[in-house]
Image 1 (cartoon, one colour):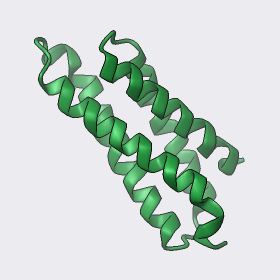
Image 2 (cartoon, one colour):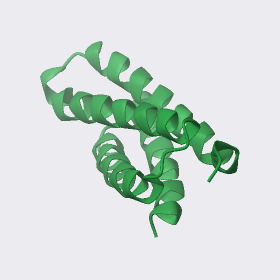
Image 3 (cartoon, one colour):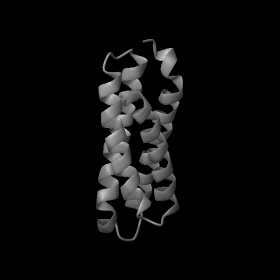
Length: 109
């Protein structure tokens, strides 16, 4: 299937990647960086995978369903972790992750 059919998901993946990158960077500036370690780790995982999936879709990957399943799991994990923190950047990241997971879940089915 052509990448044009995935424009909405490509945009959502990009927005999630950006939100995770921002959250990652902002977490490093928090007073208790050690407390944010899991959030930072999952931000990196999610950002990297969303970027990879975005590029794969742009190249016309035949592994859409498989990558969508993996992306769903990673985005949900990152969103769940970020949701536990009161920081605005974490809450915005969680929202982006959950939106991305929801869109990926539809493709994974």
